[in-house]
Image (cartoon, rainbow, N blue to C red):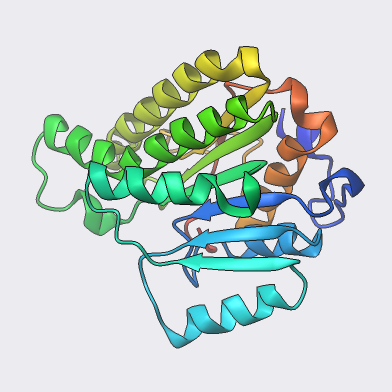
Length: 248
């Protein structure tokens, strides 16, 4: 399915209808989301970037994006609880008078699973990771509905490829939670022409076949789903295999 969706050259995609597209990217860091942001900047997009870390490397990323994007707004809100997440989501939803595309980046690291001894604790951790993406999705989608603006949300969860049955089980918990959220939101907003899709870590040890293998692949998929040809797809969960090793 992946090759059918994206084509075989993930680096050659350009969609004229996305010129000036208004994009929110949450969870950006120097190691996660740069290729995705750069793809939309290359379309002269107007970017709203959210990060929880500041560094010289991130400053360099912002400077690079400013060279091709029409405009860049950077937010560093911590968003550690529901109130802060909702407040940020409302602010972001009104940027540039509205948004067309939302990319929520949700990187999971091995350290996130440490000292968590039960599936319940793992589920709580995943729910915490999904808090901001869920609030952003609902608030931005509602803004799109109010403005009679069709749009797309893509939730991108990545983690290192499972090396054991236990790690595969953990990936399965994370994937199931993301899939449930994505399909529920997709069903909720489909009547308004708002699509919600996801990229999730595969919960298998062996090669799962056609998977997204790097952030450039994910960036190409994001462009496709935001473009006119991708507007028939919603509620889809695509596999990300090895993406965390190569950058988000």
